[in-house]
Length: 373
Image (spheres, rainbow, N blue to C red):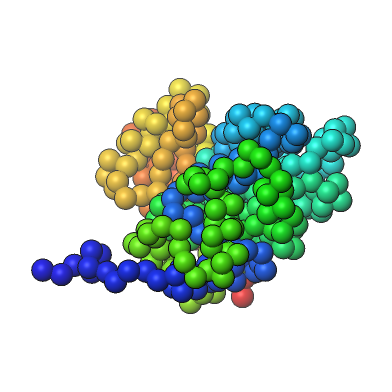
């Protein structure tokens, strides 16, 4: 018995290269794009280990848990790390980056997360990129959550290493990712004696054996299902139109914030300023005495498919995430999430206005859609 997911013809090098080209067009980049055969942590770590070492002084911006992880990797590589941490309910500003670079002119590497799905904030990469470009540091960006939901423009912003993944706004699987690499990033890797080689983490292996070879022979058997899924994600975005996909995510975020503001019950947006809130996920702070993980469990009891989750780690007690990305960036997902949260709050004796919340969400979505036209 044949099965469409099992009985597949081998994925050719030409098909692999064509998918890379489509990802490059999605990013509007002329840099080399390398698709990695694993979740986005693979190129995120690989890019740091390839370009950082004992001679590196890195400014590591922390606006959520991933920034903390990047600092750990940089230190493990032997780099001198200067952490710039801001509260998770806000974003970092370009002037803060400028001040840090002025205070430490030896900085030659800047690491930043674009949209922090875990905390619900997004950072102004265009403005930050100008500052980093003026300073001359290598710019490393985690755009895993943001791609497909807001502009990601490595060439325009001066990003040397831009990592994306399929599992958030692109609406695909977690098992495939990609990184765009500038010429000076390749040069930095080639000069780094500690850059991984003959390793699954090695970007230089892909450069020397794949890119420089004219993309004729793959390093190893590709993850077929994930590659085909990535291709389908890009096709779907192309069919919808990237601008339309980004507008849909922005509308979902605006509708969720408006609905929560009208809902009451003591729940409020975790990220204070709407302009600093990520379009992929709206994070909420629960009122005193309400444990976020317990409230989410109640909300999901009636509909486990809703895009609701409690915050990770220490944030599980106070943070709720409405993950309105990919296929869940829809009015229905927003309405369902607000309805479930309102019901769970009411069960705990909180006063809520669900009808008002749904009206506010609908109005915000309609306004966003009108503005996008």
